[in-house]
Image 1 (cartoon, one colour):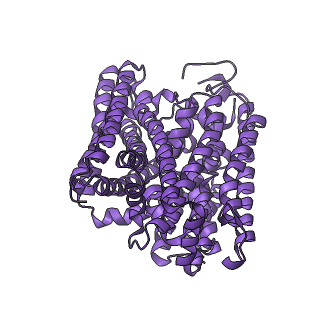
Image 2 (tube, chains in turn brown, yellow; image 1 turned 60 degrees about the vertical axis):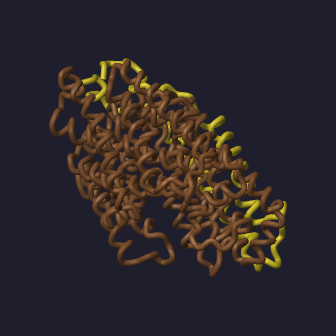
Image 3 (cartoon, chains in turn purple, orange; image 1 turned 135 degrees about the vertical axis):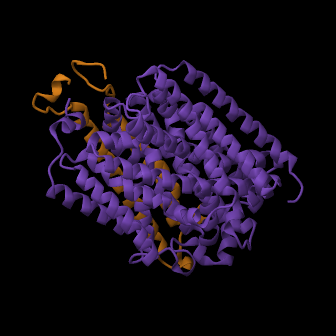
Length: 492
Length: 100
């Protein structure tokens, strides 16, 4: 893989070109928009059903769905595919549980970020400050990891060096997100979702072809290790408590991921949401099934890999014609980019809306002079966060690598209860929310350091239980929220 | 201040509908969990030599993963068609009392 692989590079380049074009289009829309903040950070709440579905799928599927996940499936067999399928309800859980109430309240309080909703509900600097801090820190850590994953993939597929790959990759994401804002993010997500599905279909077909059909592939896995065909995996690695706790981590808890949540108030009307629930369930399920199954069955075609992570890139180069392989590899790159872009735009929105406007410039959104500065500042902030992440990915600091391990669960620990109870429990108040954030994130870190697994479960389970308890007990012990808040969240 | 903050809090009917939809989604997620869990461990716990096979794959995998997905896509489709209602998402339903 020393030489640059032109046949793979060309389709990738065309694909990146298309993404730049979408960014330019979004920037045109942005320059005509009446309300800059609403357009830049939430696309004026104009997503239709198809775009909403695809952007949700693209946000959920990240480097882990294409690199890490299939890599583990390679080692664990069908048991890991089974585990991945617990993500099937994710789309209807997030869209359905946060639901239309979330969308209506977001319009009532002009919310652009998740913190806006929390501010309106809890009216507490501390709740908003801590959640914003958690969001920016965890997002940066997560984005660095995604950048590294993307660059490695680029390197493996095209033969360009890691740094060149990282540069092209990072420049693309940062540029289109900065220039186009949320609309560019959602539109590119939609394209990227389509690319993922097509790429996966092609790969699966190629795999079956190369392996001589499903029968011989399964037979070869059975000869390698019959445990690859069980729900338990080799050496009973996938115990029942572990699998059950994954249901919480990647299914239920995803309601608490802010970059997914923000999409749940970015849609145009009820109809868009109805379409998106069905469509995103189908597409997400198919992508999860296909990718992990390729990883698991790929072991029959390319046996003996030490690092499972390389299975999808290697498999695609092995079983697909180079041009098609290039298109396929655009899929994981797409998944990675679409996770970064959604985190980048939300981190920027949080800094601008929740830190800059609320602490320094309360009238920036209305005052025209300040409005222009806000405009520029929003661009700079998005670009700056992107560049910080890029620099960190060049030589990842240990702290970032460490934080990324906690990002996914840590975000859930911070956001899950304040969001869900804030929407559905009248008695929930700021003291309770604060308690659940502190106890949740704190215990998540402690549990991760002290135990690897908790009674065989992922530590997100005791974390959410403790966070929820802290929320309820503290809320009941302090004053209920004031009447005006209840009117916004429950009244007509 | 808009008028509605001073009168007795009256629930927005759209929120009641939203709560119903949220519950439907939670119930469906629970059903999905049961299906996924019961078919996999019900058919996949015995030694591999005693497995039944469908389309060349272990039966537990086919039922739990390959058939589970389309089945629940169908279920969520029916749920959305029957339980979900098309409501406007505007900030306030009646008497738009002020520009927000």
